[in-house]
Length: 569
Ligand code: ADP
Ligand code: MG
Image 1 (cartoon, rainbow, N blue to C red):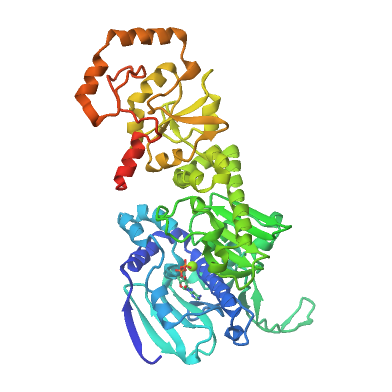
Image 2 (image 1 turned 180 degrees about the vertical axis):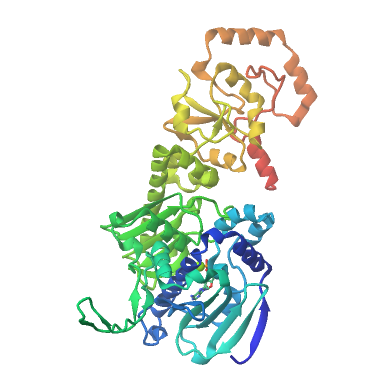
């Protein structure tokens, strides 16, 4: 190589490398999964770009990954003929971490390897996992369509820096050479690598090939001549796109590994749904619910959406048009038979087929969640704790599925002592008192504040359950949720709260008498408070507190007013 330049890694890369080497020792073999996964992505990207420009194939359209071992040199080489990288891409992709939420993630690390190793699993390791087993990595690459002279060689020992040099590279694509650490030589073994591929990468849709050594001529048991076998590349994976296979032929582990490949997540998914739809619109969807919310889940601008394929050809990542925002945590893919191959984000934006696909996928996710809630309450609780607040955006965003979404919500309530959000609206309705026809709730700045609301006193006394809401999003949710199962929602902070049939004659009389006893006090309070308040009224809803402030009946609760004030309105 001619001119060599040295570059420093981004700080986070250094931290990641350090952490990885010290914490992933029990799971070293995943480096191969990550590198094969990248090779498959590179093939997808090339196929997509070649739709418009066939010459990018350079007369080599059979995309594959080749894995070979050099025992003497103690190296493993993973080579693909995918899209390759330009110089700038190499520096950006193999010198920094482009993943959103990276800064946040690293600020959470404690410096304690044992603790941090749990976190690294959630973050994902990608290309840098090569350094788990290698103390030197060489990448040679050339972008599809570029001249042979525009090849790039990247090398690093995984410490603070890497070097970049220009090389001549006639073949397109990327080759990664791992110089194995002294104590990792066990990986320089074809059989070992083969079993790792079948464990993690069977679902990869391009062929993963391994070199089978030549067998010299030999003698059979009866002294006959067994002819020599030449060495050859042998395909070691299934090499069919997983989602095109029959559900019954796909194992749980394959689904899980496929999830890790497309989501770049490191942990197993919580649930998935794989569906082939035929008829007016034809498509296959494979949708996953992750087990953990990503670090930037609450940034509504984060990349989300599905991986889009058209007739098995990869088109784009993060096609957000197919998932409503409140389901932005869903990962997966959609393979459409109806969209044109040259579909763009602009075309997707305003398209009948897009709408049908979006409705279909939304329905699948809601069904998957309903099923989980019904069959595995514990798992559903895990889901709810991670993603519940996103789902609460649903009733406002997705009018047509409002009732379904409402059925999936979970709340804290005055029933039981736990603060956990475990009560469904169906549970609530089942426990409603005779004569009760409303679902009562209270919203506040925090769960603690909701729990100590003076408005609760009368409900406690009468043994009527109230849903307790203390999250910022709850007020927004309740302004879009008016009823469930034909039962109206009612904020207990409303002034003219009508307890209806829950009130009996005797209490009504007692109330009137009590009001007579303190005649005149209303007038005095009104004069004292002036126009600071709209009105002063008697209430019988308080049992311990002398007074409380309520919103008028125009609809806005005090909590909503606070929200609007905070927003500067
Ligand atoms: P991720 O796959 O999650 O994007 P990685 O760390 O695995 O993260 O890879 C970083 C980036 O490096 C990829 O997004 C891709 O742009 C580039 N890259 C890695 N391996 C290859 C490859 N074999 N061919 C082309 N680009 C690659
Ligand atoms: Mg990757």
